[in-house]
Amino acid sequence: MFTLNCNGRLIKWEQPVVMGIINATPDSFHSGSRVENIAEAIQKAGEMLENGASILDIGGQSTRPGSDKIGPESEIDRVVPVIEAVVKHFPEAIISIDTYSAAVARIAVKAGAVIVNDVSAGLTDENMLDTVALLKTPYICMHHGGDVTDLHRPMAENQTMKSIIDFFIERIDVCKSAGIKDVIIDPGFGFGKTLKANFELIKDLSQLKILGKPILLGVSRKSSIYKSLGGTPETALNGTTVLNTFGLMHGANILRVHDVKEAMEAIHLVGLINAE
Image 1 (cartoon, rainbow, N blue to C red):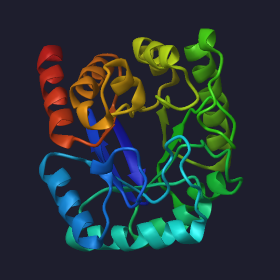
Image 2 (tube, rainbow, N blue to C red; image 1 turned 180 degrees about the vertical axis):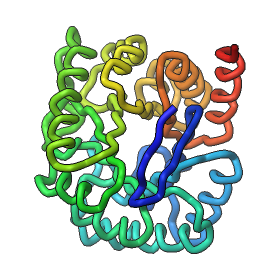
Image 3 (cartoon, rainbow, N blue to C red; image 1 turned 180 degrees about the horizontal axis):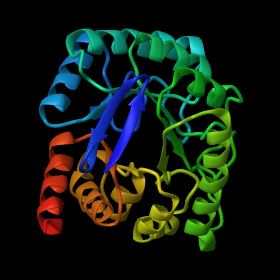
């Protein structure tokens, strides 16, 4: 399905894969994703890998609406010990660093991360793309629809997929010019989009295949799901699985989730449906 060169480590996946979320933060919107110490991080990483996760996405800066912004130094202090511990206990694990800071990305890759996941698509830190190119890691480029000071500011509803595709055409070209070899695109469910626009994004997801890049879908337990169902992040697993299943059937290659086992089950069953 797609191949990534992770700083010299060639990884080939023939079917969709799961990225498990590990937040070294005190304020991420879903409490179940947070780890408060190294022991918790190792336990969560082990459980996710055992349940089938192919990537572990480790972040130290919450990107929920209204979250407190911390500096790169504090972010490094949060994520580097977690990355180092996970690499030590699970040396074959593929780790991505969830950050929009080039300084954090650089130190995290030195600690053992091999993918950079940037919710700002290189628009927050002007050094990010050049840094990723030098690090020779794949780059997850997310559409946010807002501006760099407010990634959640909604864009126009009536041009959701057109705006996303235009955004990625420009960003992919900039990434290529910087020297980044492998770009993964994330349409940014929940970032800079209204409730209606988020569901239009899911409905039209297959249109992103025209860009010829792996597609990451990150809907896990987000507010568009639980508010639509009258629940909370803690009750949004079933709704998450519904949208992940639809996404898989319309081109998603990577599912970024809090709940690895259920996402793997969705991949398995959709695979059976699509089997020839």
